[in-house]
Image 1 (spheres, helix red, strand yellow):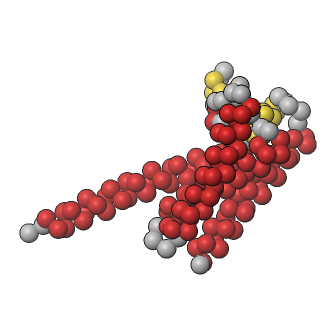
Image 2: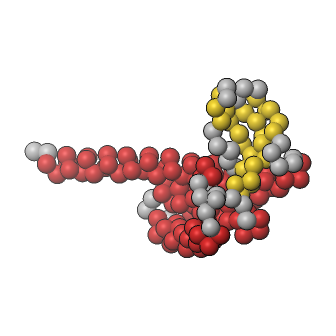
Image 3: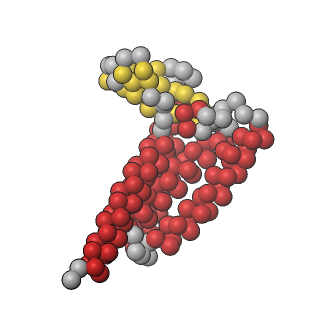
Length: 169
């Protein structure tokens, strides 16, 4: 149960930081406003994203947007809770990754249900090329993707070592 409490604390912290930062942006910036933080690299920019990652699906019909951006993520959160529970004892890395995805999904779902869009504000760029703006919830999901990839390679190495041990003379 210790891991579940730890994951719950992490999830709560991420959701709170995500919502606090989004609220601070909404309270202190007008839509589209951008303030340089590191000239030539990073701005805080208030963006409203009605779509998915990189704005995909932003212009889709409202019914499709409700299914893909509200209903499916809620179902996915249920599945993530199950994954967190089933990996809690035997795989800390995957349990952490699933918890990060859950926290990010909930953070963005709060926006979608309350605002009908997600608040993004972290704007990295080089010259005139901007990476799509994102937020704390998106960052948690991206970190989780990296952890899942790391876990994949760890499991491949374990399987390879297991095969080598059983075939060794």
